[in-house]
Image (cartoon, rainbow, N blue to C red):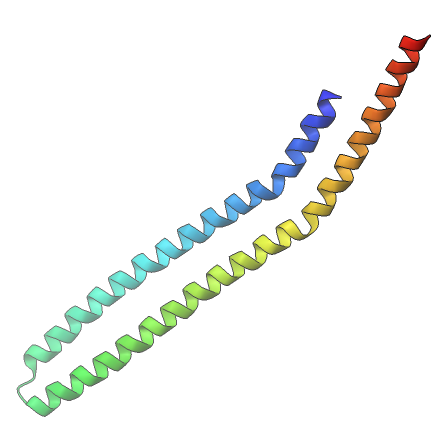
Length: 129
């Protein structure tokens, strides 16, 4: 009987453990992405400043600045889309995890209750005799 409860508990925790693993993987991927994007941003800022220092013509400097801002905006939008896609994928996986697990847990609980009822009826019959 105790084994049944233990198994039921372990089985019901599997989706939670999988969700925790998925969330950890998501967090690691987002931190890695953020770190890479930060390095890329700092390097591009430095390269842009070096290019601006060398330019003597104001119009050329303005063009460089405009191009840099456009490129920076595109990079930020791309990074945001990548992060949003990663979060959306993780949410979808979480939904799939719990979609089927609730029915499984209910079925297992029903089986356990049926076993308990059988055991209790045996004990009751034994005590009545």
